[in-house]
Image 1 (cartoon, rainbow, N blue to C red):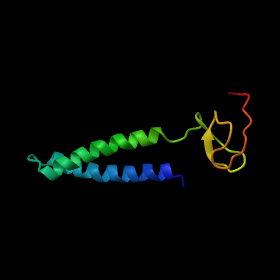
Image 2: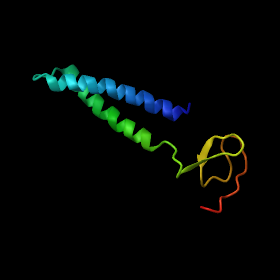
Image 3: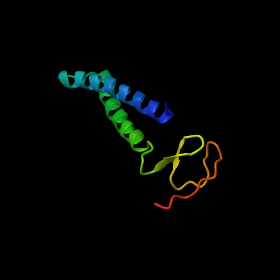
Image 4: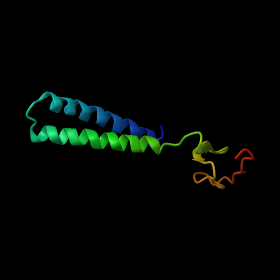
Length: 92
């Protein structure tokens, strides 16, 4: 599994936990300091999760290396993982 994907999954699990704490905060009329911290944590983790998700490779930005099958940028001339020299695609 890709490390970034794993990081996204961990961030979303953290977000869900923080969202549950935030719901507890909303249910209480008088929030304690711990509940305010949970709400702030839910907001911050949501923003981080969206940022990490946007940084993941897509079919528009990355291709698979013909030798090692790792994802690399379409504009790359050499694979950063195996050193394979890449031939530019005529479609680009």
